[in-house]
Amino acid sequence: MPLPATIDIAKENLFASVEEMRERNIPEVIQQRLLRLRDMYNYWLQYPRIREQEIVLELQKRYQIQKSAAYEDIRIIKYLLGDLNKATKDYHRYRFIQRNEESYEMAKRMKDARAMAACDNYYAKYMQLDKEDAKDLGYDKIVVQPFQPDSDPTIIGIKPIPNIRQRIADKIKQYMNEDVQDIQFEDADFNEDDIFNPKKSQETSEP
Image (cartoon, rainbow, N blue to C red; front, side, top):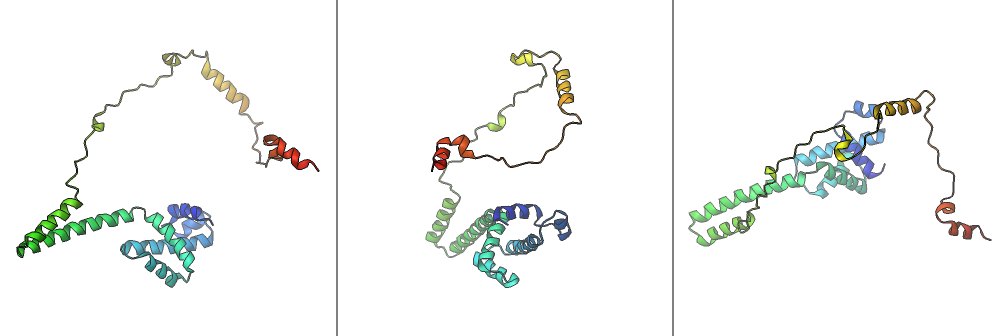
């Protein structure tokens, strides 16, 4: 099955039970892959700092699949993880600030003014203290204009049609009756060149 279709199925069924997958007519081979993706999805969440290559090796070790198949799984898992990279960056931001404070305290105890200034410099640069704060444009203060729905078309300059509701009902009754039948779709039997490119069609038919 093509990768986009597998992603769509995984989005809806990654945590579904096998019984639910069967009820949704998901093929057996896709069910097995979803279970494999779920396993590695949880594994990557548990160890978010693990490298992609290590995930590939883990996939090959657990499921005896080819490297190319493992990389295809990685692509889907990374898509499903979504904001993992953002969460990881938030963690690293926290760690940076924590370590910077520890370094500053250590430099202070050692009375190392140069190291203290370096910590302050890194902190200011990281927190972008040299840049102006974003201005509040006041969008939250915009008052939404009140609109009152109305069925009278004359409000916008349209001439009303007499007995419009009765006419609609009559048309529905006229066309939606027991004689209406569903039909099967059939491919159109025609040559597109005859309609859209008659010159080409003529040249092709000439001996």
